[in-house]
Length: 273
Image (tube, rainbow, N blue to C red; front, side, top):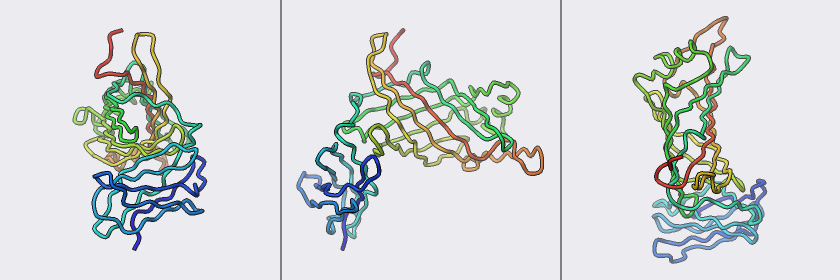
């Protein structure tokens, strides 16, 4: 019977033969150690039920730890794991709380319009925080956007988007995302799974996150930058308005791309400037 499985890849998506998966239980006792085959696949024997720690290593690559949930049947899966070359490893921000700076952050939503062009809507009022953990892949984040601040550059359209046909900002004033944990996909890229609350609905979404680095700012603080994006389907959030302007062409498309360019400042709150 198989136990814990995984497929190990490089950042370029090549199989990483010879990588090692080590599994330890809650007491730190090693309960499995296997080497990846030519396809980058690893499979342990059946393991004790419970939550264990899986560590993946390979010469020349940054080690990676994952939590492994093992079922009563002794099985579990880590899915596809990306190990990053040690030479390509970026410096990660220090652990602790980081606060979103709304002045230097932007949220942009893009939807198709009339099937031939795009509408871009900016949300300038965004707040929240990121809690950087050690290890980094256990970090969490929370962001909230004031729905009424939507700005497409046309006041009449903005008023319509705020109405009950779309965002219904009177009843649902905040768009919020809560994420926990990160899956590395490259030298400076991760996926953060989480829950998006929009228009009274809650849906699981994945944010594709790119890390831009960290450093001192001119005001005596330390900042880090992230870009995140995801695709949303407005019907998933009970936004069903379909203004037909001609022969079945919807005024606003059903798919919306959401992009967040975020700066965070180290600490529980923003410093005075």
